[in-house]
Image (cartoon, rainbow, N blue to C red; front, side):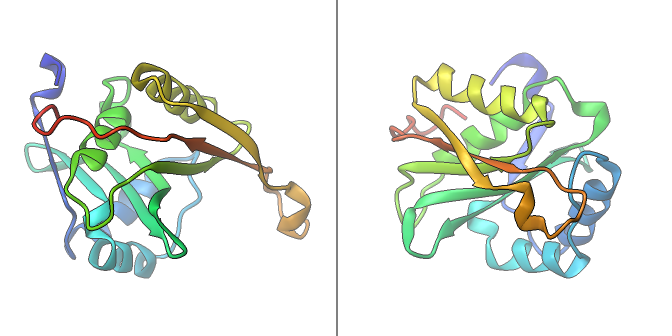
Length: 172
Protein backbone atom coordinates (compact mmCIF):
# COMPACT_ATOMS: atom_id res chain seq x y z
CA UNK A 1 0.00 0.00 0.00
CA UNK A 2 1.41 3.38 -0.97
CA UNK A 3 2.05 6.13 1.57
CA UNK A 4 -1.06 8.06 0.56
CA UNK A 5 -3.21 5.00 1.33
CA UNK A 6 -1.88 4.40 4.85
CA UNK A 7 -4.51 6.74 6.29
CA UNK A 8 -7.28 4.39 5.17
CA UNK A 9 -8.82 1.41 6.94
CA UNK A 10 -10.45 -1.29 4.77
CA UNK A 11 -13.02 -3.65 6.25
CA UNK A 12 -16.18 -5.66 5.69
CA UNK A 13 -19.32 -3.54 6.05
CA UNK A 14 -21.95 -4.12 8.70
CA UNK A 15 -25.50 -2.90 9.21
CA UNK A 16 -24.45 0.62 10.19
CA UNK A 17 -22.76 1.10 6.81
CA UNK A 18 -26.03 0.71 4.88
CA UNK A 19 -27.21 4.30 5.51
CA UNK A 20 -23.67 5.59 4.99
CA UNK A 21 -23.38 3.76 1.64
CA UNK A 22 -26.77 5.19 0.62
CA UNK A 23 -25.71 8.76 1.49
CA UNK A 24 -22.39 8.41 -0.33
CA UNK A 25 -24.07 6.95 -3.43
CA UNK A 26 -26.51 9.91 -3.49
CA UNK A 27 -23.55 12.31 -3.45
CA UNK A 28 -21.99 10.67 -6.53
CA UNK A 29 -23.83 12.15 -9.53
CA UNK A 30 -22.53 9.50 -11.92
CA UNK A 31 -24.05 6.57 -9.97
CA UNK A 32 -27.47 5.01 -10.20
CA UNK A 33 -28.68 5.25 -6.61
CA UNK A 34 -30.50 2.24 -5.19
CA UNK A 35 -32.90 2.28 -2.24
CA UNK A 36 -31.70 2.48 1.34
CA UNK A 37 -33.09 -1.04 1.79
CA UNK A 38 -30.79 -2.26 -1.00
CA UNK A 39 -27.68 -0.90 0.80
CA UNK A 40 -28.84 -2.31 4.14
CA UNK A 41 -29.44 -5.71 2.53
CA UNK A 42 -26.08 -5.83 0.75
CA UNK A 43 -24.16 -4.72 3.84
CA UNK A 44 -25.75 -7.57 5.78
CA UNK A 45 -26.03 -10.40 3.22
CA UNK A 46 -22.92 -9.69 1.11
CA UNK A 47 -20.49 -8.23 3.64
CA UNK A 48 -17.94 -10.96 2.82
CA UNK A 49 -17.71 -9.70 -0.76
CA UNK A 50 -18.08 -5.98 -0.11
CA UNK A 51 -15.66 -3.37 1.23
CA UNK A 52 -16.02 -0.22 3.33
CA UNK A 53 -13.03 2.12 3.47
CA UNK A 54 -12.62 4.79 6.12
CA UNK A 55 -10.33 7.76 6.68
CA UNK A 56 -10.45 7.95 10.45
CA UNK A 57 -14.21 7.72 11.16
CA UNK A 58 -15.41 9.10 7.78
CA UNK A 59 -16.59 6.75 5.03
CA UNK A 60 -14.25 7.41 2.10
CA UNK A 61 -15.67 4.80 -0.23
CA UNK A 62 -17.35 1.46 -0.70
CA UNK A 63 -17.44 -1.49 -3.05
CA UNK A 64 -20.46 -3.79 -3.30
CA UNK A 65 -19.99 -7.18 -4.97
CA UNK A 66 -21.61 -10.59 -4.87
CA UNK A 67 -20.83 -14.07 -6.21
CA UNK A 68 -22.94 -15.18 -9.16
CA UNK A 69 -25.36 -17.88 -7.96
CA UNK A 70 -24.56 -20.23 -10.83
CA UNK A 71 -20.83 -19.35 -10.99
CA UNK A 72 -19.63 -18.95 -7.40
CA UNK A 73 -16.05 -18.28 -8.54
CA UNK A 74 -17.19 -15.15 -10.36
CA UNK A 75 -17.71 -11.94 -8.40
CA UNK A 76 -19.97 -9.30 -9.89
CA UNK A 77 -19.05 -5.79 -8.77
CA UNK A 78 -22.34 -3.96 -8.45
CA UNK A 79 -21.11 -0.54 -7.40
CA UNK A 80 -18.03 1.36 -6.33
CA UNK A 81 -18.38 4.81 -4.80
CA UNK A 82 -15.64 7.14 -3.60
CA UNK A 83 -16.23 10.41 -1.80
CA UNK A 84 -15.16 13.34 -3.96
CA UNK A 85 -12.50 14.41 -1.46
CA UNK A 86 -10.74 11.03 -1.71
CA UNK A 87 -10.81 10.55 -5.48
CA UNK A 88 -7.60 10.21 -7.45
CA UNK A 89 -5.81 8.35 -4.64
CA UNK A 90 -6.20 4.81 -6.00
CA UNK A 91 -8.96 3.79 -3.58
CA UNK A 92 -11.00 1.97 -6.22
CA UNK A 93 -8.14 -0.32 -7.21
CA UNK A 94 -7.14 -0.78 -3.57
CA UNK A 95 -10.67 -1.86 -2.61
CA UNK A 96 -10.55 -4.41 -5.44
CA UNK A 97 -7.15 -5.63 -4.18
CA UNK A 98 -8.48 -5.87 -0.63
CA UNK A 99 -11.51 -7.83 -1.79
CA UNK A 100 -9.68 -10.43 -3.86
CA UNK A 101 -7.08 -10.93 -1.11
CA UNK A 102 -9.78 -12.09 1.33
CA UNK A 103 -10.24 -15.72 2.23
CA UNK A 104 -13.64 -16.26 0.65
CA UNK A 105 -15.65 -19.50 0.76
CA UNK A 106 -15.16 -19.89 -3.00
CA UNK A 107 -11.91 -18.83 -4.68
CA UNK A 108 -12.40 -15.89 -7.03
CA UNK A 109 -11.33 -16.68 -10.57
CA UNK A 110 -13.23 -14.02 -12.52
CA UNK A 111 -14.49 -10.53 -11.81
CA UNK A 112 -17.34 -8.91 -13.74
CA UNK A 113 -18.66 -5.37 -13.72
CA UNK A 114 -21.00 -3.45 -16.01
CA UNK A 115 -20.12 0.13 -16.94
CA UNK A 116 -21.86 2.72 -19.11
CA UNK A 117 -19.93 4.12 -22.09
CA UNK A 118 -19.89 7.62 -20.56
CA UNK A 119 -18.31 6.46 -17.30
CA UNK A 120 -14.75 6.84 -18.56
CA UNK A 121 -13.11 7.01 -15.10
CA UNK A 122 -14.51 3.56 -14.16
CA UNK A 123 -13.56 2.09 -17.52
CA UNK A 124 -10.00 3.40 -17.17
CA UNK A 125 -9.69 2.16 -13.58
CA UNK A 126 -10.78 -1.40 -14.38
CA UNK A 127 -8.64 -1.58 -17.52
CA UNK A 128 -5.62 -0.21 -15.65
CA UNK A 129 -6.17 -2.58 -12.71
CA UNK A 130 -6.42 -5.61 -15.03
CA UNK A 131 -3.36 -4.47 -16.98
CA UNK A 132 -1.28 -3.93 -13.82
CA UNK A 133 -2.20 -7.44 -12.66
CA UNK A 134 -1.56 -8.85 -16.17
CA UNK A 135 -5.10 -10.21 -16.32
CA UNK A 136 -7.22 -10.29 -19.45
CA UNK A 137 -10.02 -7.73 -19.65
CA UNK A 138 -12.75 -8.60 -22.15
CA UNK A 139 -15.58 -6.21 -22.96
CA UNK A 140 -18.96 -7.00 -24.49
CA UNK A 141 -22.42 -5.46 -24.63
CA UNK A 142 -24.27 -6.50 -21.49
CA UNK A 143 -27.58 -4.63 -21.77
CA UNK A 144 -28.41 -2.53 -24.82
CA UNK A 145 -30.08 0.82 -24.15
CA UNK A 146 -33.25 -0.52 -25.84
CA UNK A 147 -33.77 -2.89 -22.92
CA UNK A 148 -34.29 0.08 -20.58
CA UNK A 149 -37.80 0.68 -22.06
CA UNK A 150 -37.23 4.23 -23.20
CA UNK A 151 -35.73 5.40 -19.93
CA UNK A 152 -32.83 7.76 -20.39
CA UNK A 153 -30.23 5.07 -19.70
CA UNK A 154 -27.16 4.16 -21.68
CA UNK A 155 -26.20 0.67 -22.69
CA UNK A 156 -24.12 -1.27 -20.18
CA UNK A 157 -20.81 -2.84 -21.18
CA UNK A 158 -19.73 -5.97 -19.32
CA UNK A 159 -16.07 -6.06 -18.32
CA UNK A 160 -14.87 -9.63 -17.61
CA UNK A 161 -11.48 -9.69 -15.88
CA UNK A 162 -9.56 -12.90 -15.40
CA UNK A 163 -8.68 -15.54 -14.84
CA UNK A 164 -7.43 -14.03 -11.60
CA UNK A 165 -4.36 -15.41 -9.97
CA UNK A 166 -4.36 -15.50 -6.19
CA UNK A 167 -2.64 -12.48 -4.67
CA UNK A 168 -0.13 -13.10 -1.93
CA UNK A 169 -1.79 -12.59 1.45
CA UNK A 170 -0.61 -9.58 3.36
CA UNK A 171 0.04 -7.42 0.28
CA UNK A 172 -3.09 -5.37 0.68
